[in-house]
Image 1 (cartoon, rainbow, N blue to C red):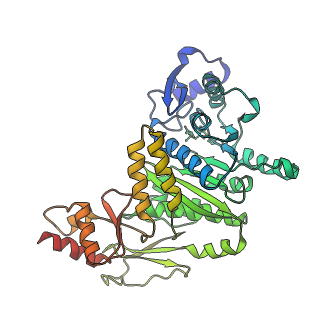
Image 2: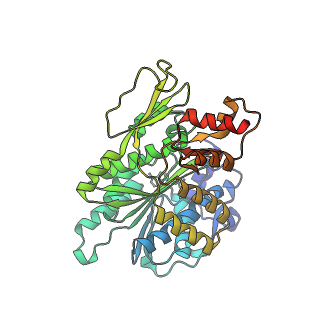
Image 3: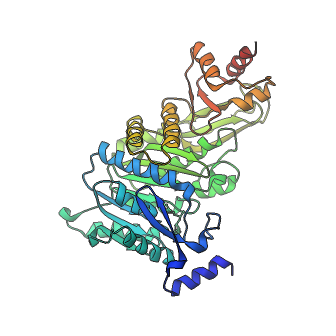
Amino acid sequence: MDLNNYYYNVFKHKKMEVKDFIINREGLADFYVLAIDENTVPSKSMVVFYNKKMMINRDITNLAITAYNKIYSQKSLIIVDSMAASGVSSIRILKECRNVKKIYINDINPIAIKLIKKNITLNKLDKPKHKIEISRKDANFLLSEIAQDDCFTSEQEKYKPNIISIDPFGTPNRYLNSAFKAIQKVNGLLCVTATDTPVLFGIKQNACLRKYLSKSLHSEYCKEIGARILIYFISRMANINNLGIIPLLTFSYKHFIRIFALTFKNKEIITKFIKNYGYIIHCQYCGYRTTLKNQPLHIFENCPLCNTKDTLDYAGPLWLEEIHDNQFIKEILILNQKIGYKCKNRIDKLLNLALEEINMPVSYYNIHKLSQNLKLPYVPKMHVIQNKIKEKGYKVSRTHFDFLSIKTNMGLNLIKDSLLDLKS
Ligand SMILES: C[S@@+](CC[C@H](N)C(=O)[O-])C[C@H]1O[C@@H](n2cnc3c(N)ncnc32)[C@H](O)[C@@H]1O
């Protein structure tokens, strides 16, 4: 038995004492974490999970909830924090977001539940009691219960959660079906984190086929491929529940991807949206790439660009439409300036780059890698190559997925020519 497992068993039975805790602060929340976890690398092996590097995720979540509340005029919010760990996210929502009518704070770990209760008291959030429901359940069980309660409640009392957050260790795949059964069918906000990035980014391709029913691909733009596979899978899970999703914001940061998606239930639009699924074809030799939208997968023997045989590979099925909503991101950016979280500047940079990605083609080119391949004596500044591409009449933007990359509708050979032009 490892040390943390030992403490897990100890804490399960013993009363927690002052010396067992360290106090932390994030946003407007004070909260305890376990002293025993202090020097553990954030992982499953902590007695109760807490990762301060995920603060940016919680900041953006609160900004997204507030933006959603405003744009989709949800008068009161019913929120499910299905995997709450220390409860820091829920406490921050309660203290920083308006109009929260009810919040379910759940975790399967019994020690997490003890800590959540302590943290609720610390933040003087115990009253009114009906607003907070703390539970120790499997997330699927809780979500199914919520869905079932809804079937037996009279029309006036019906309340489906408008917001569900899924923040597991690794893949969120097995929680999505019950989340779509529990969530508000029109304009519900699903917030999903995936930390199994080696799976989504093409390092563990068999695991991706198994978990997401899709082939991943390790390439210079694998982060975008991974995010699009995740959106595809979420959308597919919505579809089998007679729902569709519109991605409002998708971001990849350090070891995780977070997606905020809006639900809808119009069958014609759901069918139309199925055309948004497709494939990316990629040449492993020259870096050529193209998309196949709403077409069966067909791979040529030779690359259309370099003509090399058997170098074409593919990723998919995946989501090939927009991964963000313009109005939603703009609202978050305004709120970010007003609220001024610790991560304000990083959020601003990340989301402004995400905003640039709207209306741009799928995939991106790493300018450092291309310059190296072309044996250029230096790497041009991003704005210099962007201006060169614009001068030639093409669209160009940066991307939040990789600060050293650009998105453009210019073909690969012309991008190379533009880089070589800058040399002279
Ligand atoms: C990555 S942590 C969540 C972090 C938390 N949302 C935060 O912001 O600090 C994942 C949590 O999911 C819990 N968990 C794992 N499997 C679960 C399940 N099937 N149902 C509910 N909770 C689960 C773990 O106990 C752990 O606390």
